[in-house]
View (cartoon, rainbow, N blue to C red):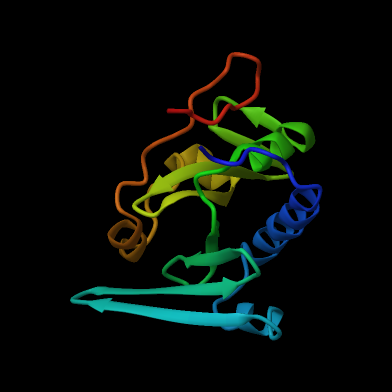
Length: 171
C-alpha cells in the first residue's frame, strides 16, 4: 500500500519545482544549462534520418526536470518526473489548493500555462505547457519523437471527481 501521508515539505519543494519548470519555458537550449549551474544536467541529442531533437534533463533531489524543445531550440514544455511517481496524492492536493483546474485543458492553470498529469512507462509525471500550446495541440501532442519513444504512450489522464478537482486513480 502506498504511503499517502503528506509531508509538510512537499508543497514547498513542489512549488519550487513548478517554478523551475515555469522558468525554462520559452528559453533557448543554450541558456537553460546556465540557469542551473549548481545542478546535475544531462543533455540528450537524438539523431535519426531527418530527426534532430534535443532534451535537457536537470536533476533535483527527488525530481528530474526535462526540457523539451521545438525546431528553433526553444523550450516548449517542461516535465517533472518524481522518484515516487505512483504516490501523487500530496502533489495533487497541493495543486488543488493552489491552482484552478481547467476541465477544458485537462490540467491546473498557472498564469498562462497549464500543468497536466501524464503517464509513461515509468509512471506518472507532470507536464507544464503554455496554454496556447495546450489549447491548440492538446496536452503534449506534437512533442519531439524522443519523448514518445522514451516515455511510451503518454495518454492516461487521471479520472475526475466531479468536484472541480482531480483525484488520483486508486487500484
